[in-house]
Length: 108
Image 1 (cartoon, rainbow, N blue to C red):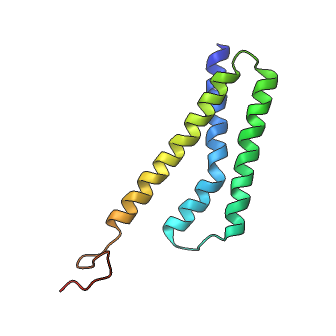
Image 2: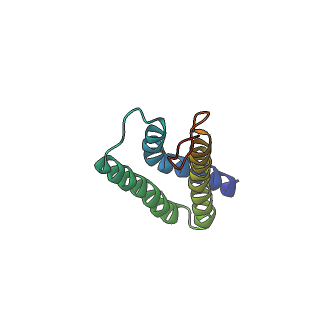
């Protein structure tokens, strides 16, 4: 049961670590308000502190299951960014109105 708990908490903390930059990325995709560079750097720093701190605590407290915890954390983090990348790709491919070209050329 210990291994399942380590995987569960690793996945939760991986999602929590991906949340600050993902929120800014979503705001940038909506183009409602462009996030600043300072906000981006702070979100990356917060994400790093959450992920690294969680790994440090897992190594300290869960000696045998630290690898499971870390793998679940990284997997959850990367799955969030795969989802965000697919959304950005879809938005880039389908964000063009009818009759408009992506290269800036006229549609004549």
